[in-house]
Image 1 (cartoon, rainbow, N blue to C red):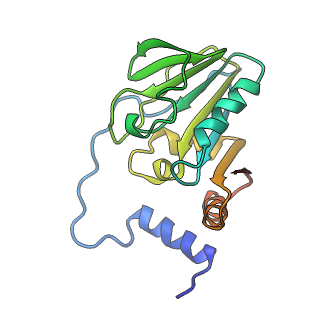
Image 2: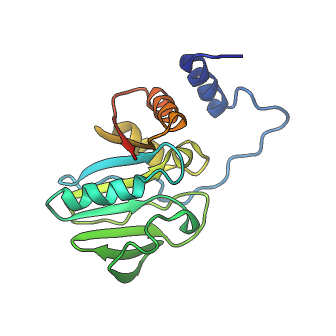
Length: 188
């Protein structure tokens, strides 16, 4: 059966709200004290969202951070096993809280140390640009936390996909689910 994107979007919102839960629902899990991230007033934040895994969102985020021209960082929001930055740093700089830090030229790379379901809140930084590298599945999952709320407030969102028919369909679906303007990047 064919369904419109609008119907699928409404179904997704209903699922997120729990309208289709069958049987008893588990109680919400306790969250850490810090679940909100507020960037510095002079910090410009851009979300780079992969419409699927392995489409090149980390590469695009790193390229944008390199081209930004000022102090920049990329905050990768995925598990260590899914990291696109495991070998991207020219120098590893150790850990800062729940983040492993490295740099590639003038760009600071931060990626989570643990494989928790919830993405940790980014550390404070004095950079001009922060590129939040994430995937659509992380944003729509149970551990989105601060990430989902930040995405709704950002002016700049870049959706990344691969140059295939299914990839472009995923880009269209993610843009519809996002519900506002975004820049689409098709990596080939």
